[in-house]
Length: 244
Image (cartoon, rainbow, N blue to C red; front, side, top):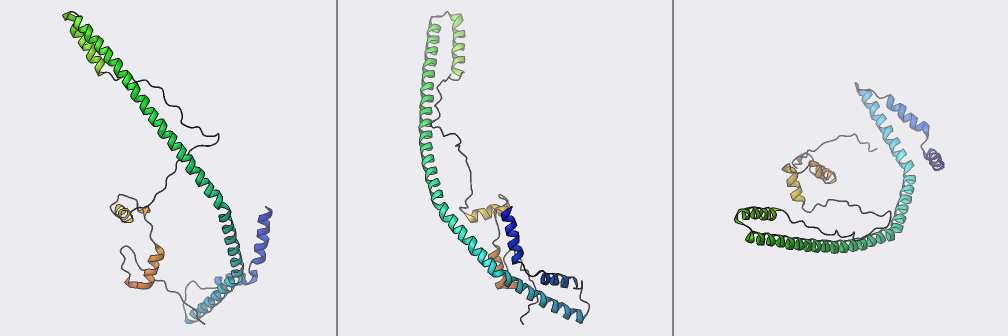
């Protein structure tokens, strides 16, 4: 609150003379809604000259303060950037180290899990083979009227999935309390022409593209009415300029 009050007092100190600003506002109120005579035409020209002169005066009044403020902001930003640099570099190094360790442990855990599953499947298959062999032995010694029943049991057993049982691999690493992993994604344009074609063909939203207005305005100033870029129209604005 104290800082806000200080900023307000400084701002009031830097402001233009209120009387002059009020005079400009009052002058604007005197302008006609439509020019109906040469006298009014000349009067509006005179008012325009006053507005331009006052605009230049106001700009000149604030310029040194703005320049000082911009220099201060730049100094603060440069200082902040310099102070943050070792922190950011340290964070990046830690992130790389942690991700490298986690990826190694996850790869090892995945390999162990795959081995455990293969071993469990092998054990289950061996048990199934023993069961089928036992049924086959019983079938060989069974009377003819029960051979079909034993064969059906064997076929049913073959059709059933293997009862694979394995011990899950433990968490390959544990993070300190308060630390967690968060995924985020960003987009990178790797082929601008393909993106443009996708938008043109309706396979991507128009929002994927943003017109370069700096370039387009520059071309409009150069080519004027001769601007022939598809989808772009030259817009002419006419203003009265005071040179004296």
